[in-house]
Amino acid sequence: MYKPTDAQTWKGRVDAADGELGLRWHQVMQLLRLSPDQELPQVAPGRRGVAFLGFCCDEGVRRNQGRVGAASAPPLIRQAMASFANHLSSNYSLHDAGDVLVLNQHLEEAQMQLGKKVQALQEHGYKTIVLGGGHETAYGHFLGLQSGLQGEETLGIINFDAHFDLRSYANQPSSGTPFLQIADALEKQNKDFNYLCLGIQEYGNTRALFNTAKNLGTEYVLAQDLHMFKAEALKTDVQAFLSKVDKVYVSIDLDVFAAGYAPGVSAPAAMGVQPDIVLLLLQEIMKSGKVLSLDVVELNPQFDIDSRTAKLAASLIYHSVMNWR
Image 1 (cartoon, rainbow, N blue to C red):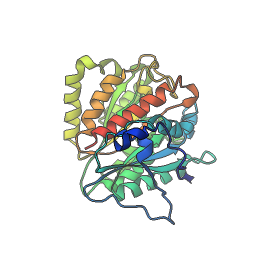
Image 2 (image 1 turned 180 degrees about the vertical axis):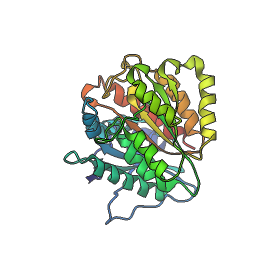
Image 3 (image 1 turned 90 degrees about the vertical axis):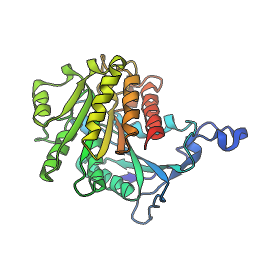
């Protein structure tokens, strides 16, 4: 259920004549092994370590009657990131912690395994970025973030998504249920569910889901209102949400984008949002100093065109890392 990343995974263009000034991500990436027989290095004080962890899963998508294929996404996102120019300062380091795999449709076990890996990385000082996988990634990701909250600290969840993903999981969890699972888990701990969803498609969410969102106190912005000409108002809304919480978990479901930008997703959106407004708000969030972790989910390489969706996912990750405070 866990596979360390092979050293040959990270490869790309090399500008040898430029020395350190010509380095790219594949040249500075350090591999981590998350196994009981190997001690995980601690991030040194004053340094920033960013660790990537794949979740090779689309069992939740299958259960949700979506287009399967997201299980093969993490290597493609890595490939799209490999040749990024390295503009990080010397106190930053990049790490690849391998992949959690789903075997024989055992989603719940894999989510627990993902949580344990995220928790280990967080406890050793790493900022974590999970490469999905379907949006069932979110619940496993959350399981690993709970230990990062100190005392009465509150967690805020910001989800760029066309869907609330608040479906009932009475029959079984899926890619459409993770945030209701999180809400119920927080309720059992007597903690608030602080959830902001950006990019909601009215036609993609039933009245029952809007009612669930309302009952849970979910804040949301419809896709039709997520535009650059409303940027200042949207930044104000995001800042207001950030001011209410101590820590933040960010999730980016690539189906929030219009299909022209993100054709390779489990549920493509004909009327989705444009990347520029998401990038603007994402940079604002990452600069807040409150972000614990980030995931990018629902890339389905089987339906991608020219690696367009994989490159979008990789670009969003790049700007997240560059603006992480």
